[in-house]
Image (cartoon, rainbow, N blue to C red):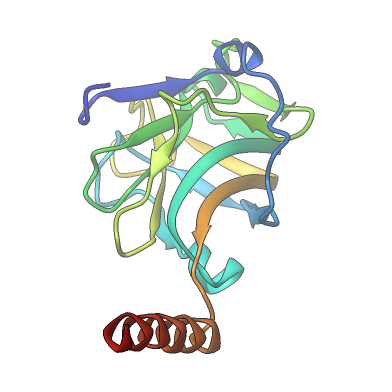
Length: 192
């Protein structure tokens, strides 16, 4: 996998992935009510923020975004199309990036609701591996900018559901007990 390769998720591409079944972490629900979609990816006018799964899920590290679901209603302003409204997910360094396009099949203006029908597993080549800061960068943008520096579309209502995997981080007490156990083994070896 090329580390700087842009990956676009259209619902049809996700449909080939089976539903994820091995998650031990709870899903993160991100409301999108009233978020406006402005300009092309990376433009400073776009709505963007970071999600910190560690603050929400705790006691894990090396997070990987492994599944996405959506229940959203989108509106495209004339002459923009519903198929131009995207949301991007990336790690902080930008080496893993995916773009979700719920209205991919609708090249027209209007209002429409979209549903993934649950959380869909990301094929391993589409997964986003978070950097050591454990932050998922989220940016709402337009694939084609019909209204520069003004909104082209709105995420009227709904939620995105994000599913992560992560490696458990032992509790401090567990680490202390492990350290004492290793020290005891070392002393025992020395005494022999």
